[in-house]
Amino acid sequence: MIRINQIKMKLTDGEDRLSMKVSSLLRLRTEEIHSIKIVKKSVDARNKPDIKYVYSVNVTVENEKNISKRVFNNNIFFTEEKIYSMPDAGGEKLRERPVIVGMGPAGMFCGYFLARAGYRPLIIERGECVDNRKRTVESFWSKGKLNKESNVQFGEGGAGAFSDGKLNTIVKDKDGRHREVLETFVKFGAKPEITYINKPHIGTDILCDIVKNMRQEIIRLGGQIKFCTRLTDIHTENGEIKSITVENTNVRQSENISCQVLVLALGHSARDTFEMLSKKKLHMEPKAFAVGVRVEHPQSMINEKMYGVKAHELLEAADYKVTYNTKEGRGVYSFCMCPGGYVVNASSEEKRLAVNGMSYSGRDGCNGNSAIIVTVTPEDYGRTSPLEGMYFQRSLEEKAYTEGKGVVPVQRFEDFEKNRPSAGLGSVVPMIKGEYRLSNLRNIFPEYISSSLIEGIHGFSKQLEGFDMPDAIVSGVESRSSSPVRINRDESLEANLKGIYPCGEGAGYAGGITSAAMDGIRVFEAIMLKYSPLREE
Image 1 (cartoon, rainbow, N blue to C red):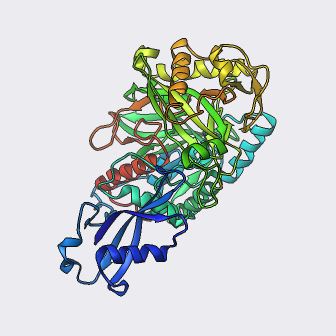
Image 2 (image 1 turned 90 degrees about the horizontal axis):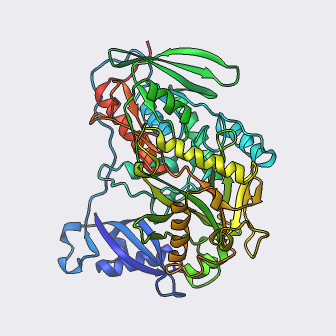
Image 3 (image 1 turned 45 degrees about the horizontal axis):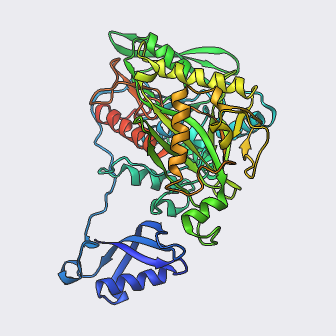
């Protein structure tokens, strides 16, 4: 097929105009073109306010090889579409269902692909199914009563279920896994456009429905799912997994489950599980991660700076991505930007407070928010154990809880810079799920983090004018941007305890919904290459 890049179109141009443009570029009649498939669509706002869409398309035509070479240039060339294919199954026999711990994107996709291939996985998830979980989370935001087992971090869909639902990733896709993830989301309810728009997103409202649809398909294909079921122990023999102990968190009843294959798709917040696994001599190591604050600006301001206009009926709420290196050489950057979104209380432990960002599919809230975070390394927080980064996160969350007196602490940026508690709000009103309190977030952080945040936010204003506006709202603490540990695995994706497959963001191999889902597929492939499907007896 033929790839054409850099096709620029007016915002008001329809796809019929795209077809005419392709015909012109290839010097063909429209009837000679068999198909046009959009593979990428992005916004070019460099010449504000003359904004254009930019397309890349795959085209199939009659007598493709006979097209004159003179129509080809750097933006027109032959290509092949990457089609995902499952590996051939191995020959080793499974005695038990493969067990997956966690039903975030990594565990869900690993389980779905195992179910498709006939392996009948068992998935255990400490939190609730997504419908019950939504009610529990909404109750927490309105009443403040935390369920430690089912919350913004734990439950069907993982932490990504209460986010913007971003699906972009920097992971290379030579095997077609990225495309397969996006097409799977479409199969279960997402809009087809996520397969080609430059920065695809689903939104928390749609993502929750997709998660439920995937679960139902896993069950239909022979899989089994146990909610409100937490991993409490693993049992090994001669360096291999033999069984696990789980606890039903509703009735506090334990059960021992034999298993030959155990996928640890824990998510980045399963701290009690990390502690248990460390005691069991599962090899893990500390890793760099980032901590900081959420920053809110008026979405109208962001739109105007990015598009040259405050709003445009044909464009979504604008997003941004900003990075900065401080004079001390420390990285400060935006993460998980939520256009027209909300800051959410994302706590999962008593008397510890963490925040995250969330958008609905419409992205129609008054403010845009983003995590503004500072890189920290084991050299910053210590190397006395693999879990030191986790303990560092906890210490910040305890200070955030104290500073906010149990609710989300917020502050005007000007007051944060001057190290004084905010006495009132300015032009920006926080859009927060959960209660908040005017506070001084400088009391949460070590000075090197606070000073890096201040320098970085001022630095960002050179990229996005007004970013350092005095009335911008900062809230904290943003401490769950990624896992603070990595569970080591070998080339076969197994840990030092054989039969255990660390997977996804919590294990240190992903950094978002899509990369976690892709890693879930990689782990499925590793299991399939070794074992034959588990057939009904």
